[in-house]
Image (cartoon, rainbow, N blue to C red; front, side):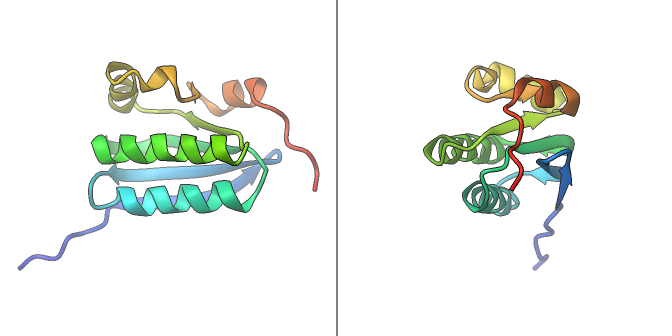
Length: 123
């Protein structure tokens, strides 16, 4: 029996006071739980705005979309600022056809998100 391979990389960096989670690989039924868990931990762990860079996502199914919605709900519950940036054309299309672009904050790039989001407060 072949073992399932997890093709997802998550890298957290701080840029100009914003936390940026760089996501690359596939967001699917195998990897979405890890993605959801990491987002939840980051949202609950700090009040600093969280930007999720989807530029490296090569595939996304309904499990990945569900994780994004869950993260938005968690952010709202914790009064945290969450935004998604740099979605590939394929992922952006999924957000559009599911109308998630109407309930998630999605920006074409980091500068656009930073210009629109609340500025982080120094600790």
